[in-house]
Length: 470
Image 1 (tube, one colour):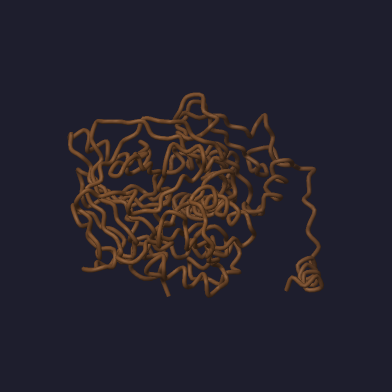
Image 2 (cartoon, helix red, strand yellow):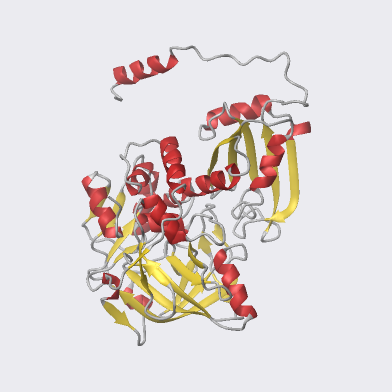
């Protein structure tokens, strides 16, 4: 059954051996970050629940909730042994159920305590620096909810980096390519503050969809329902007209100050590098609502891959690009955008005609996610599994012809946190066509692919059995 809150998921994770309760007292820094990094790098890394954090009383912290394919499978209510490609196709199948509109509820535990006078983030949350050189405390896995000021029917739920600067001030990275950035731009053109809510510690599918690059007018809650197989539960925010996840532990409400920018950062990003300090928007907090009992504060470790963030942004980005492109190019077999949030994307497809791979690469660059993030787009034939890097590298080494199959696009839109940029927000894109020649291209007339012996699969199973793997 779908989970209604992070707490529900933790019960399931524990029953499946995917939760470790850390009962000993730990320091907020460096213990939490070190343990979370370790969990994300372990095969089948478990969820960590820190129950006793020095200086934070009875508040608890959950880390690595999405940080393994086993956790990812449990989030989708699949057997935890479900392999990566099977999860990709299951995710893709559930995507087709969109939209499943959310269910509105009138009451939820997050409304048990309302703090509308002198709200303090320091008092309510067990904050810690995710990495030692961060510019301060960050909410690195909270969902930001906002509406289009010109068209209030369009609401966005997204994960953006949030820098806690004071009891009631939060720096917000609202990139121009993101939906929140569009909402903020429109509000500033109207010279009005943008009302936002920040939901902390959510049911795992909500967090997954919040970092999924949907189209601007697609509703995240309706996608949550499609992935869950049951409507997402939402509740009206205490102030304003925003819908927040009913299962959240805490909701922070406030306004983004229009036409003002403040220093924010640095922050250790998914790239494995610290991004520099930037001039960003800022939110003034005016209300906090939360559960009455101790808050489970879920945060996200970011740093040198692989960590939880790489699992969190892997299949949702891959399936999104797959669905957005396959609607126009049915030849596409699969898309792998798991590496550094899609800085590298691998597409496997049948080739309609010579040069078709370049068309696919260019189309990728016009998707909502593809506009900024991908730097390397690798196109392979349908006989190559894009999730098997050995196969992909083989295709590049024997099918890629640099003089014909390399496309370089300079000064294209880029990720603002890419450490390789010369000008922030601009990047050079590379399309690598690692496909076999198709008419009218010159075929490899003297090249024949070696066929795999027919009994290899059965022998692999025998060897695994002999070794005790199964």
